[in-house]
Image 1 (cartoon, rainbow, N blue to C red):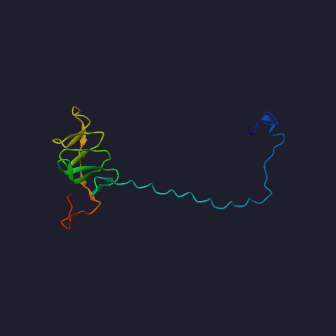
Image 2: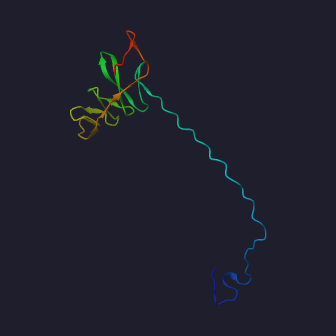
Image 3: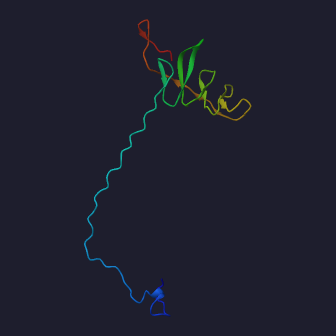
Length: 143
């Protein structure tokens, strides 16, 4: 379409021969009202905590690492704030699973022993007591 075409009386495509436009003669349709409320999404289920043993646990998404070991038994647990972490032999630090080699002298975690690049090792936090246990009638904690 083109407006004010001077070379013809019919206009481009004959639109000027019988021009038309819409007119409104009725009332507006009724308002449909408010939309229904959006469904409420329940909060995601809480991850269960990591159970270290019968007495200690770490928060969800963390790894239990032994702090006090005697033989095959662990008498105190620490929590590394990463899932599937590597527990370092110093019983204090831990490394992400992507950097599983603990370099205790440098305080870093490396991808392999031959790789010089690494990230800083993380410090473990004490594990939570999940059950009180008795020793001679008194409650004690080994962490």
